[in-house]
Image 1 (cartoon, rainbow, N blue to C red):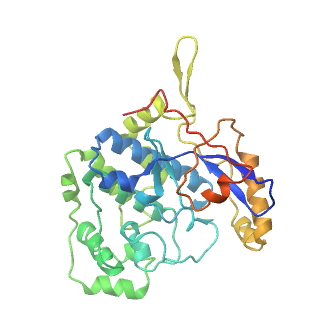
Image 2 (spheres, rainbow, N blue to C red):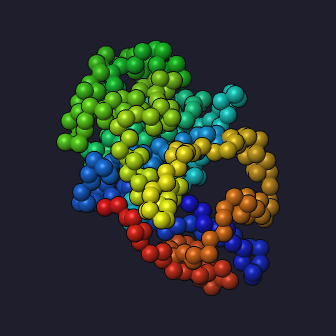
Image 3 (cartoon, rainbow, N blue to C red):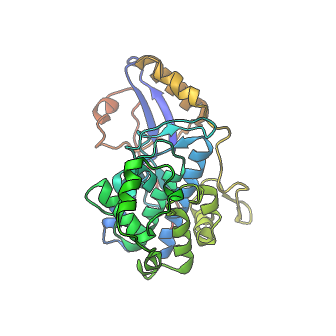
Length: 331
């Protein structure tokens, strides 16, 4: 969450965007020896989809959802980061976009097959891969190159029909059709871990459909009953949208637990930004953030490993202290 955006008094050269301190990321947690319970898996997947729903409702495709881009703090709050490949997308326009996006292990089959037109379904595929990785503690599709990556996917989902490859380029379709026919072996997903229930496999199947048009939307995935406990856990003691009233200590739950952005972004806005100078872009960003972010008085802990730390520490903006752990921390 953005906490603030500050100008320095020294001049117009720098703008500092302040965010909450996140101590780790999902990749570090997955490869660590730390145990992950089924509750962890549910609350992490729920938070990823909840954040993605907000992005997609604003017409934003992230295009690089992976464990390393999912920050996690000591209270198991998860935040999506790294929007370097994100694009504003409008389903009403026939936009051509590059298929060279998304880290290979989490890349949807239509991207591996050269699709130039795609939707938020590419982000859903990535979440499905991460869901399986949380259960198994290993990468679901780990290949040396894009062609081998596609072959691993087909080994699991079976040979796609021509209709399921409608967005692929001709060369990719020919590669698949020349190969021996393979049957669907998705039932093997039940063996990912002892935590893999029938509900988990069903949700995985919805998110890992070869055909992007038949893949679950983020709204459909959030409605799946596998995530009910994760949603309840998140809103019982982790979120900032619900609160405990006094007197009585009654938990008041938000009427909108999975919010959407007020209005979708217009693709013309992104094109307009690309024509601005660097200084004008900084001013526009500063205005955009400060108009939408409440000014919190609590100072933040600054990351000393940041490339901008030295300049920031000597600027007029710097005030650093770490927020105390939440009294409602979830183990």
